[in-house]
Image (cartoon, rainbow, N blue to C red; front, side, top):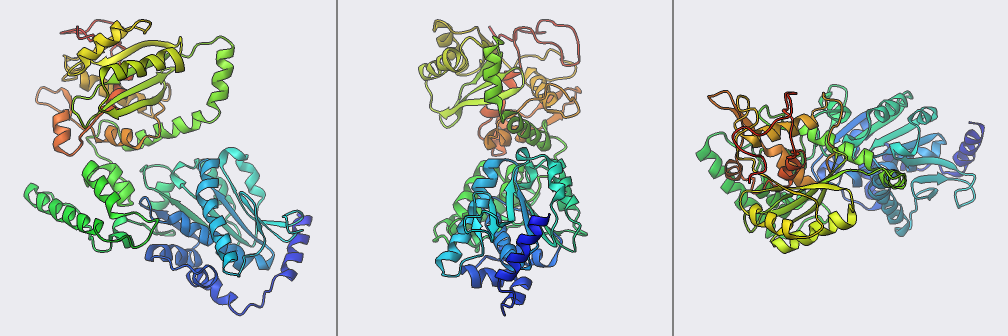
Length: 541
């Protein structure tokens, strides 16, 4: 601490603390951004900056393309410029991964720093890749670190506990993906008189610390941002959809017309969410889908009681995929060098209509899902070639079998695959047949979807699936609902019913269901003995 205190004293003497504008800038970061960087921020960005100036906690659940990270970078620069001259200021930033720290927030910080320099009014100190140093020899040596960014995997969370300053700013970017332990550690820094915590993110997961912070608005300032407040959608007003079908259709037509009219106009602000993007998502998902609520409206999805797989479980599966994926290549190489084989299963959901996708997925060690291919218009020979590459190249010697959804285009594809030499066994699955537990499930499809639900249920605590960070797969999976029919059986929404609700394709979600089917001899999901399929073969033929 002695070296830091000495460097702080040198810095304090070297910076002009009598600047007439300093008092005004400290009170108004929007004014600072205009005068120091030449920026004119849009309304919600101004709201974020004003909140940070006045409140200890500022929580920002925002839609995609809202400019939230741009605003957070302005806050970092404002903090360093206005408070580092007191000699005891610090900014700590974090995000779920090193890549996100570098390419999102700190990339914007570098841009603002260069913008100030280009205006002939440079900010103090020198920027490194993920750190800001003032004083020293001009290259950062011997200077004082006043800001740094780290991802959770880059440090022991307990090491942060030694960082304190009279003026401390903590920023958690992409906050929904940050580990709860990091939240707790950063909270432990909030002990000085002048401290600020800013947490920003897309409200994808209605659980976890970020969700809790957004709900705790009594002592937190929550600044929500919807795409419909963006300057690029200025003429489009969002109102909640009506419940009556006739009223809903008029509401939908009016909103589509307003969005299409806005698309025809020039973009007001480059870099922000556009009407074209919102129109595309509205047509793809509809207004009640969790993806539309979080990515477009900037609010946490409602927890649907009839969803087969809760949205929070899907997000947890995606986080597991990311967490276990870091360093996985090294682990896998070491495992293979020891002669240990990682079992792989392939599954194919062939497209039934021209615009739908043929989807190929893989499952490694019964847990890790990969989306290998998802394209419309693939022919049977093209699919066979892709499968041959996976089975004979990427996963050579490791593929146990290939599952194919048989109805529709699946039949001819199965014949092509079986005629192709050197492939593992090809096992057809017909999910429309009678369930193995017909007292509980209407058909095999419902049974398998609830098996998938079980593999994502955090209460199970073991062998939980790791889902790839594919937005379309998550959206499709969250769209599927269920009901109990008059016979007491669980029915899963049919594909025709989903199409009527605007969900045109379910291939990416269905391929995950197929990956866990194991048609070689499935066990009852209630823990029963291994048995054949009642009322038909799972092999279909």
